[in-house]
Image (cartoon, rainbow, N blue to C red; front, side):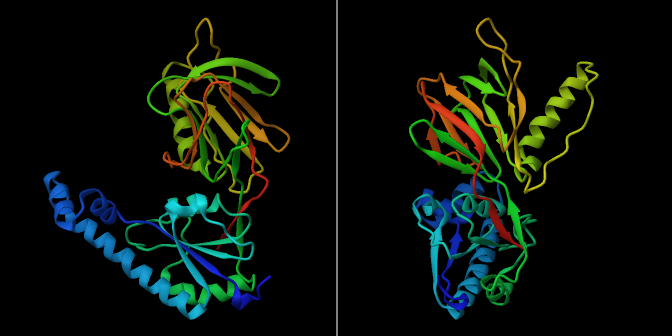
Length: 310
C-alpha cells in the first residue's frame, strides 16, 4: 500500500462535442459547416470546448504538482485496470462520473465540474481549481465520502455488468423484448419494450420518468390508485424494476411489472430474443452485453458500493 502522498491519481476525461464533430468530419472547418448548415450556433461548441480545455489544463497542473498520475479517456474504461489504492478524478459531466464509478472497487472518486455555468453537476461538487487542496485530504481519508449502491447483471456465460443509475434489458432497436421473468416466486413469459432496473441514484432519472408517466396514464383512465413517486436514497440497499409497455396476449402475461429487489432477492430473466437482446447500463448503449435466446440474467445488488468524495 502506498503512503498518502505516493498514491496514483487516475484522471478520467471525455471528448467534447466539438472534438467528436472533428473526428466525424475530419477538420474544424467541415465541422463548422455541418453545424451552421443545421442552423445551430457553432460558437457554443467552441466555448464549451475552451472551458473544458481550460479546466483540463488546471487539473493537469495540479496533478503534476501531486506526482504520480495517469490520464484515461472514458472510452477506455472497460479495459483499464485500477489499483486498489488509486484516487480517481473524473472531469465532468455527471455521466462521466457514473460511467467511471461502475468500474471501481471501492476507490474514492472525485468529480470535477469543467463548466459550472453550463452544467448543474449533481455528481460534480468540485472545480478544477480546488483539486490541489482537496487531493491531500482525500489521500489522508479526511474528506467525507457518500456511498452509492450499484446494480449488477450476471449472465449465464459468466459476463457481468454494473450500473450506477440503471440497467436496461431489452431489444437493441424499437422491437419487442421477449423473455421469461421470474421474481418473488412468480414466473411468466412477457413481451414488452424492455425493463429498467434502477438504483437509488438512478431513481431520480429514468425510473422517475417511467413511474410519472404510468401514474399519469392510470389517472387519465380513472384509476383510483393515486399516489406519488418517491425516489430512493443513494445508498439504499434495494433496487426497483419496471417493465416498460408490457403487452398482454395469449402467450404473454403482465402480472409482474414492478418490484423491489432487496439484498435477499434477485430478478431472473431468460431471453427469448434470437438476435436483438442486449443489456446496457447508465445510458451507454455502445457498451453492452448480448442477451440472446437461451441466456439467463440474474439482476441484484452489486457487492461493492461506489464512494463519491464530497
